[in-house]
Image (cartoon, rainbow over all chains, first blue to last red; front, side):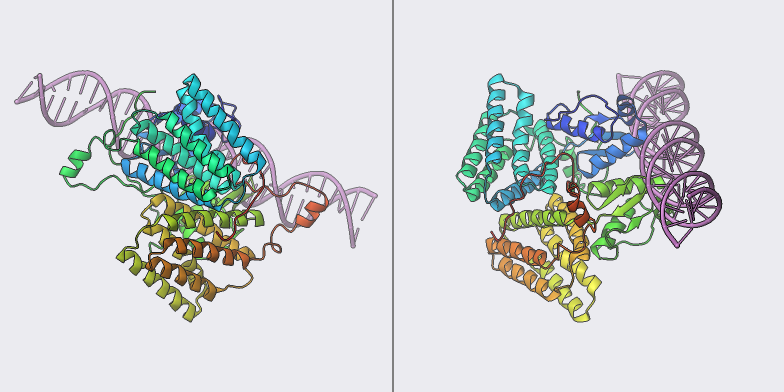
Length: 249
Length: 249
DNA sequence: TCTGGCTATCTTGCATACAAGACAGGAAAG
DNA sequence: CTTTCCTGTCTTGTATGCAAGATAGCCAGA
């Protein structure tokens, strides 16, 4: 909704702008985020840009290659798997814990699914990508728990980056169907079923990825030299490794 | 394990030190964290301290009062409830998703429970607090999913801060029992039961809190003047909506 | 043609300087 | 004695400057 746009000079709009840019698939993984460019773009000094970058780094959205620059993360295949697993765990746990679907909740989800349908009809892929991720955030919002919403928003952002890296074709209809089925189960008050469907849905999407092709072109060389694989952790201690320049955009 | 402490001047030890200080109940909620003091303590400039604070802020561990200072968060009653709910959702989801308990896993948990027993016998309350929280992190580590581990570590830190604010007496034995039961279910391969027990356990601990006394001494005045309650959000733009909690499972 | 090394330039890392707000303590007025 | 205001001090907010590493491009030598 509050989609962001241009400078505004307010406060943490840098962070928000970048995240919503990712959520709407306007920023590709690996995109270089120059402190200087962002600083001039937002009319602030590098200091504030840096703060935003640090925060995004702890959220798992960007990473820094020392003295080379900040980059939108390019999740490895292992990280991609971890993100999907985390989402399954949290979303299934969330749905299972729900007891009722309020009327506003029902309306919100219904409206959302209609938006998905409209975007599909219009073939608006960017918007579709945004909506497909947003559906899960909407569900989190139903719980009223801001902590879970924040967690799932960041995981969704990462998911979208993963899609851009590993998803050959976009099975929008399949995803939309999955969302509809989850919604139906919720409407029926069967949250256990909804949780199961959610897991299935995430499995489907994950299965639709090609987790062997794109990533880490050095992997063969790396394994033949028996070097350690790329770090999987999402938190601290992520060593630089490979160059991975930006691409396009 | 990597317990940290003292300067070291390495890198992100400031963050780690503070978090582990909270995890081991050595830092109380509301503690003021002066940029200057930390800077001299760690022999770095304020810049790096600030970066650490920003990261801790996005992790929900500290907050800043503009031009007044950084403080370890003092979760409100509402936030406390949200933290416990998030933990129930995630931990139950995690246990439910488990399929096997590896032999190392079994050993690790067994060793941990023995440590709990030892600390109880010794009456070492600080260590006990640390261990009681660490048990849940250990379980997360069994999943091998770094994302979930990080999330639960931060939530555990917040939980400990909540305990220090609202927990009148420490029912260590009860918690230990709960942990043992969870472990037994896991050993029996009954992860659904383990998830249920985990929810019950967290419910018990939450019930042991007095969420009416300590917080926000202005609440009475505030409500009598019908001012809005303290903000609860942990992130941007999340409307209150209804809580609709879960219970049991 | 290819290889190696040098340098110019661009990047972040980090410290410091200064500005501006918050607060405490004291002095003065009632 | 109480209240009000003022000022000095301490805090974070923000910008800027400089250092150090990384990279690309060029040039020379084989």
